Image 1: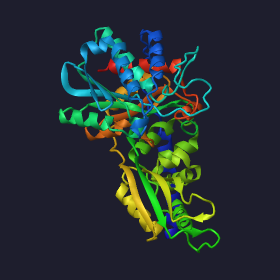
Image 2 (image 1 turned 180 degrees about the vertical axis):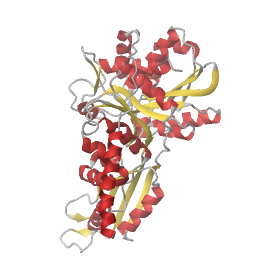
Image 3 (image 1 turned 45 degrees about the vertical axis):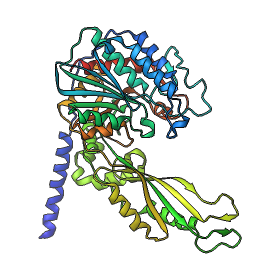
Image 4 (image 1 turned 30 degrees about the horizontal axis):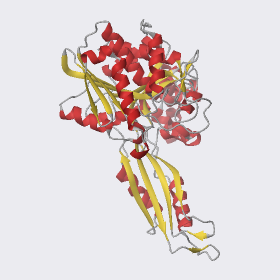
Length: 475
């Protein structure tokens, strides 16, 4: 009789799968587009001028031009008289903190960005700090990452204050000057707020953006809002020997031992794929919009098809795989200084991005166990754990409303940030930390971040300011 039960189970299973797929429908949040009559020319000119300050941060402070950083901060204060007329302003490390008092100091909101940028390599078509304005774009290092966000925050707040806006709750504007080098500005600002008893209702920083072709079969663009970030850890593997001449090499050298360690780490199954809450919410929000019945069936029945989704992730690699697991990237290698000399010491640098729920200690123990070589020293140099996961509730809904009031035909979804931002520090004092850059970007745009010929469309500049005004109107 067991065979009879098996025959009965199969049709029941099919019915359940089809039923769940049919019910897997998108939730629509219609929002009337809301546009504002701020000074577009002033906004474009402001960002252009910001780009002209070459605020390039460097881990070696001797290679930084501190005067340019000070000039940038002075420019911001002079550019926005409405804000400076009501705000208290202070500089914390190289960070800028504005407090605009509201009717209540409870449930304050923090809007964030950073004003430092990475260096511009040789090979740009124009001067990387020209701030050149064309009919369609503003050109220069920092336009996308992320003076455009700082510009949008300041322009929007200046606009609403100029129209007599009084906020119900305190508003903080926090801009660090060393995000690109994991500097102390943001952590010190958070410490300052914490010491003063400030518990933000919501924090909004750079992060996800509006992207196309987010999901198979989904034609609409998706605004992905980060609700958590993966952690990061840098690890150095070091192997040593007596060295010697390359003409008489021993069987094992530091290089060969490290090569074996890399191979074991790269293919070991210990770094397993897990479905975390941010990724699950992304699937549940975006997948119902797919025109493909097979895709909807797959993601509406993850209780059954999760092994298949994991297999697809492994095959596709890239960001899709990174959403599921702790990743290891082998980035640095050092050995002998001459091709005919055996190294007495060789090192490999590994950049690790930690999945939520997997700590640096756990990963380090795994690595040592996998390598199984007492001749290789495994050392963690920089560690920042994965952040807690922010709540998706009425605070997130304010972001969604502002997005759909600015881009009415866009799907808004939580997601997991695989990169890092300054806002990771704010999870310590806030349960609603969101990461979203209000701009509609292509793959080509994303490639320009930290790359060549970075620019931003004027259309994105204007839309970004409208987005923040739509946020501010809810405060």
